[in-house]
Length: 293
Image (cartoon, rainbow, N blue to C red):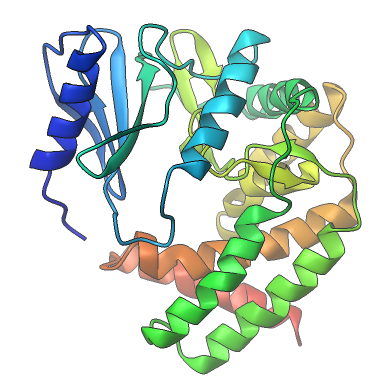
């Protein structure tokens, strides 16, 4: 959906100025439910634009801040928060926002081995995160979202029943495996190849669950949409070589749960999907249907 950018940009710039920083530009790096702005050579603001969306308040942003700061302090491959502004999250003009250091991306595709190794390193550091996180949050949140999808008639009843059945099954199965803090949404789009190396941003979906959830998120498209066996095996081999065990049963249930989450959020994230996105959504639904045959 289109957003009016005037107020969220003003919220970001005025908050930066209030903390003694002087924005000298306003480059839009991302314009979706979260607006990402580069305000200076080193300063990036992230502003939640979807004020009527499923997520309200700043609690989830506060979790992201705490996890990201812990990871950065311990040398994990993440984008650090900006050191000259309190971590927040900040509230201004009705918007929730936080601030990060700018990093320079490079055009090369990340190597699957580097993906697996850096993800395992993040998991290793996350095991020492001292604060409690909600268990299986993106799955339980997606299950609760089904009510909104039904009310707004965004999917037919058959699809909603399919999602309900598999989400309940995945949540129940994954509850029985060891849990630790996770990225939560570790798909390749939430990964940056930079001049500082491969970095993991966007910790807003962090929660507690089996490490196989993040692994499944990384390999889902390659394994089940793109047929990229080299990427799939490269990530898994590097993750294991770096010391990360992967339980195949937990990975299977994570792949199923990840399919449900992606399908459930499609109408929210892509209210006017391109033909390519429509095709990929349909293929995810067909894969999920085939599991029940």
